[in-house]
Image (cartoon, rainbow, N blue to C red; front, side):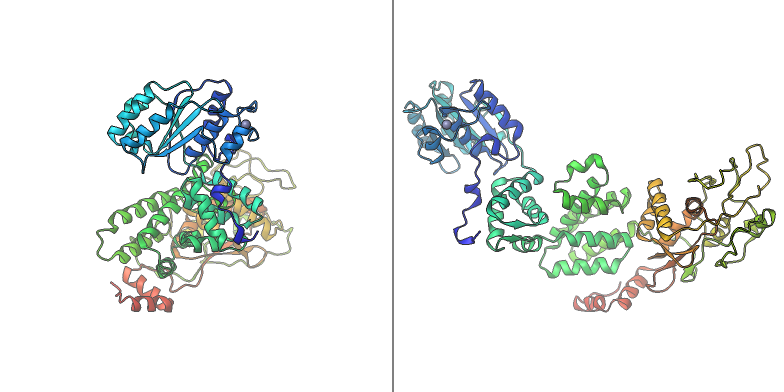
Length: 602
Ligand SMILES: [Zn+2]
């Protein structure tokens, strides 16, 4: 395709049949049926937003009812003399009046006179009055008389974007058709068709941007498409589309939400600065972020996927990110965006308002441990597994495996360890080749505990051979220590299974999604998290998590350590000022940003 002989798509791809009208299937079906059964009214009112096909359908309707050999489905043949006259815009059987600019009594009188002239060829004369609500009251009244007693051959199609402004006396004389805005997927589909016809390559995401910018109007979509195509030399990329249309790259929103998930305030603030430097208005950005969160929300459950107006490729990005956040995050984030939008106009420091919003958004999934005493914790917290205890090993020596690698013996077993954390409900022993085991973990809910206690309570390896139910539950049953070999992949599968099996443990599984166990030794694995809160989240579930993982890989030696990825000092209570100072210390760019904008650390 060469751009110099490019025909404006809106004209070239104007539908010639009802079938090719985009996004109004049920409505065009009704019209076709009416034509095929020859049940025509004298007046129709086509209502709906601009650019959705009202005038187009009116023209197709006028052509179809005059066609000399309509198809069985009620479509015009587009070949007979009358159809050709319509398609070449030389038919006398159609008269169009744009009431937006011709709304006087004289204009209507002119129409009234024309109505008296019967068609020279064909059966019907069709009068299309666009934006009929713009007629003056006098013009309305002059028109009403014609509408009340039209000649047999006259059919009126009134079109309006504002049905509520049309006089009731007119409404009551019309068959009313409500056109809906065209969905983004429908627009994208049509644009894809045009791309094929025009031999233009386009990335799906680029067409998605165009369709969203068109806001439900096919006509706008086509003219935007032309605009982008003209500067794209036959290859429309997402990047060229957003630059051409001055649309904020949704990548910014995805990255921001990742920063919110990680509790990464500096990153969120830097992304916001980038957006401002690109010249985007902050309120526009806040609204865009609100829309993004809304799209994540409808992506989070399959029932509402249909509310996500985008094509499948882009929608998948939303579904993926939605799986990483909690419903609580989504609701609070929408609330925060909305509040910021409402307060924006009155804020004297608008930038600070938006930054405050970003900080709060970063805290939803990473609440600051404000009500706990300051404690210095080591960078690497040994939380999980002391080696399987000596006691069971003595009771039932488990000598199959040469020797267990020395375990990361964390703090020495505390008295608490003696208290059997696990075995309250013994179940029959499994057959020798261990089948997939069900978690026989005690589901004793444990309060979110400090690391120290968790170290001890999680120390119990799962029992291999368990006692019959008859056995006294007061007696700790003897059991073997399972030592099956397993691969990091198998552990990862078990990790994923935990995530899938505990959908309600939002903070835990969201942390788990971002941190996979990394192999240190055959049985010792490291989980890297990003902040102290996430350590706590994992800790709250460590008991059950370890039990399930050990069951899944049939190895009681499995140990998990949690490490905070090195990003500043160990967990402690942070004041807002300390946070800010820490941000500045670790981010020269941010320090510059503070300086540039003459901000001070409050
Ligand atoms: Zn025809």
